[in-house]
Image (cartoon, one colour):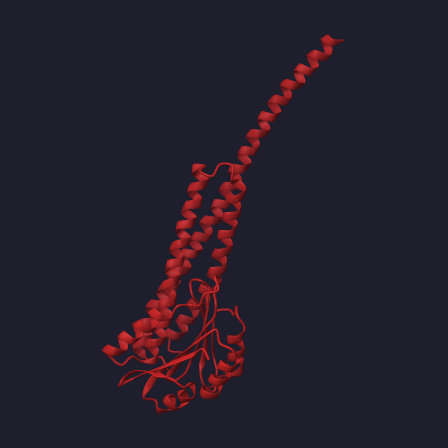
Length: 283
């Protein structure tokens, strides 16, 4: 099985060796339980569904890759679909004192790395018993920090392409430049599609839609919401700049084509004149 479960209680952090013990630990309400599942199989879902009464519709969504970013509620838990900066899907099942993270592969086939999340939550728990809300905040905050890095990477790529266009540094490679611009615009649209809905989800979490998220965690989630909105603004700006760059590149191509046509017209006129003279005197 690909299930790794930890309990975070007053006595510290404990690894739950047997997934069948999860329901018993959760029922005692003495600890926060974090269950992580990497590329789960049918047996993994069946085990967790039995232990924590997961709704079959949420499980179906977790099995189907490429779900839209969303927050849904079920009788025994809530369900969130989110993504890492590499578009690796991370599904969250949120209970009263437990959290399941289900990780699937991204663009490069790799899984979202949760080690930074784990270390951060363990450190916070060591100082003061951390709540489920703080665990949820930690996971979402780490994901959104990756969004900021990706937005900065998009900005650098846009600036480089603008330099290539205006500085004529890619002379003779216009076809490649146009393809790069279109590809970048598609990537921006694709990334924004997974980021933008998270802003609404964060707003719902901040306003207390989940009872298991305590007031102190909701204050922290406000910061995550602000970061998401900032990333969305940056992506919108970069998308507009890419569209302007596409227009500028097409204008430069048209200008060069017009110059070539003028030269061809001039040479054509000269050839026509010489042909006419040769024809007259040749007669």
